[in-house]
Image (tube, rainbow, N blue to C red):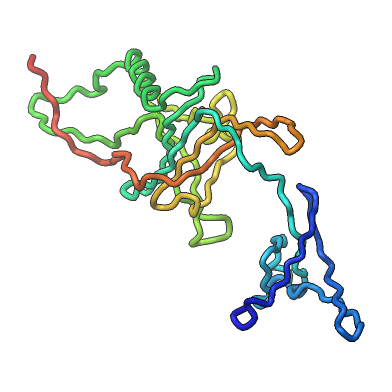
Length: 275
């Protein structure tokens, strides 16, 4: 590439959008009238490090089978040039919490099922206040008069914070994935699970708040800077003037690590009333 960097020939070839294009080779006629058929340089096995190509398709299970040839076809995707994006109906911020060894999916925007979004933090506070109206705040065991400290098994986080815990991948001891978990909710001395509200994080949970299947996120998808995923309605026109509309997601870089304040085994002073 360095010695013959300027020995390039560009031959335009128009193909339809949304198709697979395969070039068998190029027939070159030299000055003596002889025709030579030149194929692509990377026709060998997929796992050969020297078989480099600029536009190749990945071969399924290429490293397990050594006799799979390289796929030299080119895929022309039907990509749009410009789209119109509506306001975000759901927004989830994935942040790393190194103190609690969790990744939190913070639901900052929730769809209200009327075409608009509501603030996730305000919803969590309003819902917590509603639960407090039906919950008795009197302790199960009243503290004695000389008790100065109390032991707390664990505190909680706002209900729009959904935890993702690291778990080992199947058949591996080092590689991990992030599995969606749930925080406990204590109401009338009974525990229930806090479920997400956004369709993005609620995947695999039915209308009865029962999880039908586990939900995983690859560990490398959430860097230290975090990630922000927004869902909104999108609209564009195709080259023939046809309108296409859909609901899609966009991923952006986050704002760094965060702290949920989750703590276990805490000893705090007992608050005495003036009475």
